[in-house]
Image (tube, rainbow, N blue to C red; front, side, top):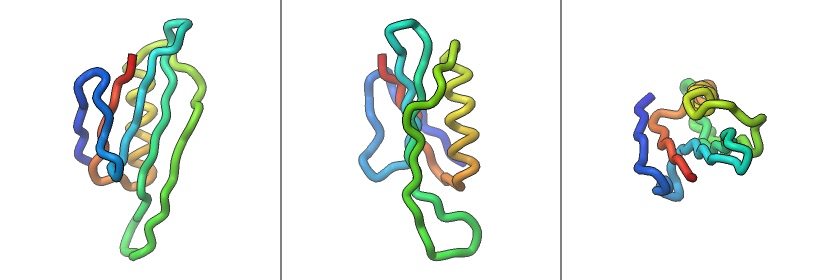
Length: 84
């Protein structure tokens, strides 16, 4: 999986697989993700998303969880967007 970390505040292209990490008012981090899942030797593609995860105490924990989610959904290239 190829990972592109975007500058703070920049969003991923509309059609890209993306995890978005945002700082909450309480200082913790929330995670949202979208991907086009196409695992294995199949022509079928399914749009999947994760919205409103449990909050993470650390940015790195939120990013690791998002990248693990993207890998489980066979993302080939994923953008990481940090919003503050």
